[in-house]
Amino acid sequence: MTPKSTHLTGKRKSLKPLIEAMVQAFAPLYIYQIAKKIHQEKIKSVFCDGKGERQCTYYLFMIVGDSAVRENLVQEFADQTCLDPRVVIRVCPKEVLLQNVHHRNAYLARVINEGKLRYAAPGMERLNDLQLPNLKKRLGRVIVHWRKRKEMADSFFTAADQAIEAGQEHVGLFLLHHVTEQACLGLIYSFMDDQPDCRDLERLLQICACFSNRPYRHFLGCAQTEELLKIMVKGYHQAHQDERFSLGNHSIYRFLELVESFLKLANTLCQDRFAVLQSEVDQVKVLKEGTVHG
Image (tube, rainbow, N blue to C red; front, top):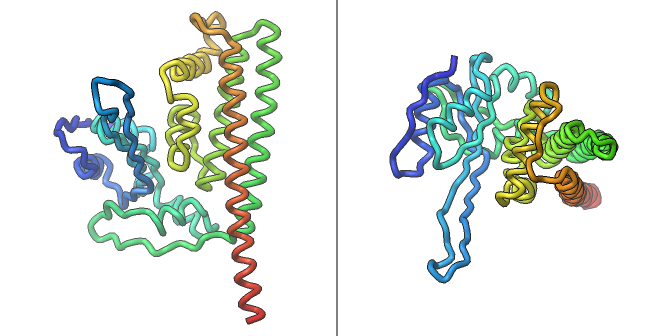
């Protein structure tokens, strides 16, 4: 059962009222802030100074003692409770956290070590820093992960192209959704070492915005592409129910082009990420060699 939400109507854009509401609703053990994104709409007009409303998105990580507390329910509660600032929430049961401590989970280590603790339940001590995995091994894992994701995305894209050429637009749209999903999941692992159990494209793009605005803006940066994303998501959910799903006035090739360019963008971002990680590996190697010969 989803806890009732109370919409926060105050003018303050503080995160504190929402955290208090979530504490009452879900009794979390800890809440960490892992990112804060500030964006301001720019308006080019002779009738204003060119600055639109300033908006803020917080990314939170909630550790819960009750495994029945589901991430989608917490996110739904937050969306209904607080419209501004916007909040994207990840939820992790304490037992999952403890299981991953011994495996040196890079995502959890970065959250606990570097995140801002916004709430700790009474009697709960601050968590000790977690050990990060070996940087070289971590680089190897993210490269392999991305290659597998891209291989799947490429296969889905080829199948989508073939389906479209055969006149099966609904099948093509369904497969293009899979392409986008694989690209998002690969990006998130490459940059955050995280593997969210989620197939909601808009949510995956919101998570991507933790490390780059480009994936989010590719689909949600303007009304036209946002509409295409919504149609693609709707087509995905109706694929097994209504083969006559309408694309409206949009050409299927517009979807094909949008997704193909997104896959190229994702690959570029990942290759840049790998170069940064390789540079860090090289720096560690130089420091170790200097210590040995010093």
